[in-house]
Amino acid sequence: MTLTPLPYRVVDRREETRDTATLTLAPSGEPLAPFAPGQFAMVYAFGVGEIPVSVSRILDSGRLVHTVRAVGAVSRALHGLGPGAHVAVRGPFGRGWDTTAARGRDVLVVAGGIGLAPLRPLLDTVLAEPEAYGRLNVLAGARSPDDLLYGDEIPSWRRPFAQATVDRPSAGWTGRVGIVTGLIGEARFRPPDTTAFVCGPEVMIRATARTLMHHGVDAARIQVSLERNMRCATGHCGHCQLGPLLLCRDGPVVGYDRAESLLTVREL
View: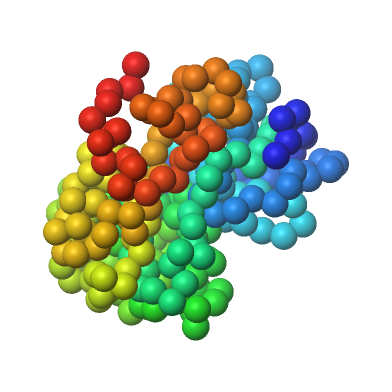
């Protein structure tokens, strides 16, 4: 973990949706320590500020990949950067996805909206070593087809089941319509032998976890990624406190057996 921001430059930008872009960053000098799936960096837009952003792919040579949605001043600034632009990055921070706990078990990945971004490195890990895991199921939800991330990659995740659904279909959409929890009954997994990974809006996380538990997945086997207002990323400022947890340090990934009661606490 590096607390001092290090200089990085944008070497690639891919437009994902009307308000979301994926940036590939290369170190201008010394790289940060390697990231694990589910961890995040604090990315600084010069003259604007700093925000936490999960890694959305892990590459070699110290490069970082971040998928950024333009929702605030800093994220809009980062979203607008192109190749050649410079940022500062510190990290890696937080507890990521526990892929070791899923080895030998079926893997169920459930994402809502931008929540697919922190899950993509997990998918890369499972797909790189398919013999170590059971059946892979990927369920992705979005507001509309135009808001669906990584649509060109979803077919490659069908090991054996990958499906996307949208709330509001547009002309030409031939896929599913409805909330992502509606896909769980179609997925091909064995609930007692499944590890689930869930990321998205909290209302979607709660609904997904409850549905999975109804199907027989143990709460401790459901890993969720939670979001609060992170500032320092080191557990000192307290902005990201959720009950007894400081999510920048104790999360963002936690088991639903710990998260269930905490998700009734409103963020201040």
